Image (cartoon, rainbow, N blue to C red):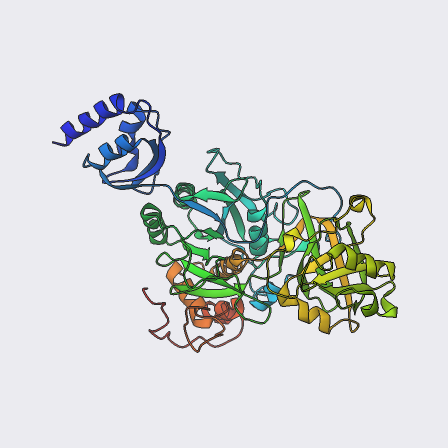
Length: 545
């Protein structure tokens, strides 16, 4: 009977596809995909991709071809591919010229100390047979903070070993995990770990479940080839489920690979996939003060939380533009330049100038950074007008703060009249609503550096930025206990996380903010001169696990 059905499939593929539109499908097979997919490859132009470690393949099919396959007995199920994308506010990078603020100095991003990573470095910085894979838009493997950690990778689109980042997101994620401690740039959570890149998202930061499965397929094969302990970070996702993708991640977990994924940036009580899949560590994002970031998704299945707001990390060399406000205490505020703002960097004290009306501008604004508030009605008093008022009073730079939570700052502009494009505007940045009060309150009491510059580093927000903090933590911990299983490392992190939110496990922060030092002490107490931990309780698993 199966032979008759297979022959029927061949006949239909040869006769019924003329003029029909093809669509990309994932096909789950009853046997090895390489064998099942050969029939399609021989009988139609279907652009077949067979997976080595998952009983499935991808192909371009017409509706009639899909129906024939579904009835053939060789297919368990099939479905059109579904999209996946980055989980941060990163945007496609454009080439720029100029130097980097961090070419001669190094900054330790606040998240490193927030998760107590530096406390582990006296015992380990991630060296050994621990491998972290960044499944993302690729990595700039020539970046001075990453090139000595890069071990290799794969590009699922070109099907070759060149995962160069053409978007910027993956390089930022990689820096949080593994930027080396070299006295320039930044430093990552595990600065001596072996770093791999799998390019599963394209130049626009988008992909689909097929590209993710192809990346996971490569990781499994590479682990079979090299051995060792493996961790995968996926700072990406979507709300659209995929049964074949779910099976692929189940296979990855069965291989003893730790999978860490961003919870999503929709601000809802539902996790994106793949973060929502069983045994995947779903990571939400917190602010400096341990409160949930307003964009962070969460929900049943959340494992941990980690810093995901104003995270400084690497971006591809020659493609970054950074804009931020930094206090002399080291606090970085995320910022955006108004259209028309000049490039430059100004360090001075700040002065509150109300809405920027002449009568609200203090006499001592000369040479300082003017802080002006957005007007209640934008059309009533334009940005260009209030900025002109304060710079004519002598202000050296301007910070515009929102007066509400509207997220339209990308459209704020100084160019409202003819000639504005050629006017010598100073550096003019806008900050998040969440940072407005902190900046205003400290006006005059501390120095601020307002900067709009070319960079090899950038500040991003997102659960994409939180996830690599946890992947890096897993690498540090595993490097101290190389014989431990993936489940033992996950458990150590759960038992030692810093509990925030509701007491115990909750669906917003999971087990809490991941604590690299406590987890490392749990698996290797002798390295830190602490007593062995007590036996673990039996109630620390998240619901459904």
